[in-house]
Amino acid sequence: METLRLYDFLPSGNGYKIRLLLSQIGMPFERIEVNILKDETRTPEFFSKNPNGKIPVLEIKSGKYLAESNAILVYLSEGTEFLPYDRFLRAQVMQWLFFEQNSHQPFIAPLRFWISILGKAEEYKEAIEQRREFGYRALKVMENHLQSHNFFVDERYTIADIALFAYTHVADEGNFDLKQFPAIQAWIERVKTQPRYISIKEEVQH
Ligand SMILES: N[C@@H](CCC(=O)N[C@@H](CS)C(=O)NCC(=O)O)C(=O)O
Image (tube, rainbow, N blue to C red; front, side, top):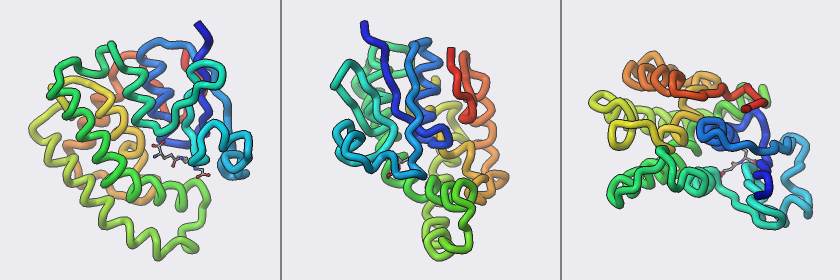
């Protein structure tokens, strides 16, 4: 079997989703750093891997590529404890994956990027304030769910938790106040105690 190759950018929450799952499944992989700040996702070579020009991209075997972090999570978790087999439970996992991409990530991740990674809070002030309200709405949806559940689906840790954890646990880097959300904070601690957990800053996973 060929080694999985992950095209990634270390600070990326979307890349981290894949690193975390691979670590927890115990699957070896080669990580290729693609510096998005130097437009390395905008080269003809990278576009041939993902026409959308974004990391993460998983190379499954030579020339076979998969993009979109949540699609990669589904692919890798098939047949593992991280993706339920039951049809309805799987659909509930998808529900949270789509929620993350549609209502959560676009309003939380860019603020962290502009404020903490680029250090350009002032330049992006207007865009930041436009998105913040929607980011808080997504956090409230999560808080409401977690007030009566330990995890997002089936009371166990799945890729729904991994997808939502990636940008939620570092939302403070986008100046979101997580102290308002005690159920989210308790869930963050539960995720951190899962076997083979790695932090977003850890490069080596084996
Ligand atoms: N929906 C995509 C979003 C991926 C994404 O936004 N990737 C960013 C880094 S987190 C990127 O590669 N940006 C570089 C660019 O757009 O050139 C996913 O979930 O994988």
